[in-house]
Figure 1 (cartoon, one colour):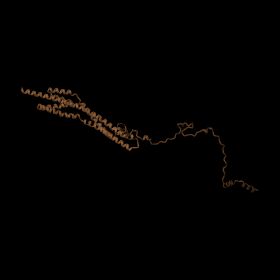
Figure 2 (spheres, one colour; figure 1 turned 45 degrees about the horizontal axis):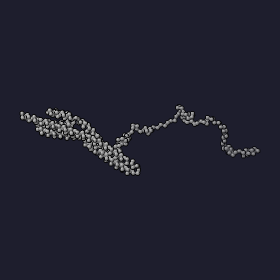
Figure 3 (cartoon, one colour; figure 1 turned 180 degrees about the vertical axis):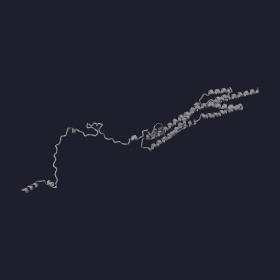
Figure 4 (cartoon, helix red, strand yellow; figure 1 turned 120 degrees about the vertical axis):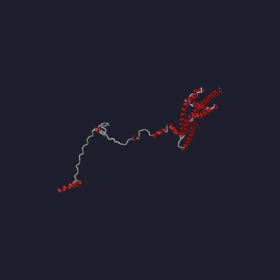
Amino acid sequence: MTHLILALALLTQDPLDTLDAKQGIKKAAPTATAPAQPTPPDAKSAKPSIPGFSDAAGQPAPEGDAKPAEAKSDEKPAEETVSDSGIGFWDWFDKVSHTGAMGLMIRGGIFMWPILACGILAAGVIIERYRTLKMLTTDASGLRQQVTELLHDDKVEEALAKCDSEQGPVAAILSAGLRKFVVLRRLGYDSGKVEEQVIKAMDDYGVHIVAALEKHLTILATVSSVAPMLGFLGTVSGMVNGFDHIVATLGEQNIVKAAADGIAEALLTTALGLIVGIPAFTGYNYFTGIINQFVLEVEETATELIETVTLQLAIEARQSEDAGQS
């Protein structure tokens, strides 16, 4: 009976439990699942917290809260590495060379520079001649009257000293004639020889006076002719360059735009040539007129002096004859 009960028990037992029992493995007891707790209402509306911010609707956290560390770099921005001392020399030169008078000179081409040199030279001559002739422009009528009166009184030495103390071409020509007259008179030359030598001395000195008055005027005459010619030459060069540029860029851009640089060069050189040539020509004519007045005045003075000297010599000859007869 006992054996029958054991056999039934073995038949009803799980084969896996039998195997575990033989291997000594104990199965863990099943754990009881705790009932689910209800979720509070506030927990459903709660938002995840962000570092540096408080839980209150995205407001910043108090200053005492920890802040994320900012990464520092030793590299400076590109703007700080550029020198703040202003634009460089070459930048300034490039800007100046494309604007203002310098830009016009460069656009005008190579013939602008010799025209500019002619203009500077002409300006220097005009200033120098104006100052010189202005100093020589004096009223010589009073001097001529005084010299004539002194010669009538036979005061040749005083007349010569008066001429030496004055400036201008009239005083210079009178001084040259009187000096020759004094020398020949002391040497005892006859009246005909004295008159001849006085005239020759005044003519020779008059040539030097005219040469001194006309000093540098040939430069003005040359500039007044050469500057416009250089301008016209620049015009031809500019037109040639313009047509060459048109041929080189044919079909690539507008023909008017292609010819613009050449036309600008042509017009600029012509304009500058006339700007230089017209004042030079005007100055030359102005100074020539003043010099002609000086020359005319010198000739009149020389004629008066010769007449006075001739009269004085005639008086002296008559006095000598009267003294010899007595």
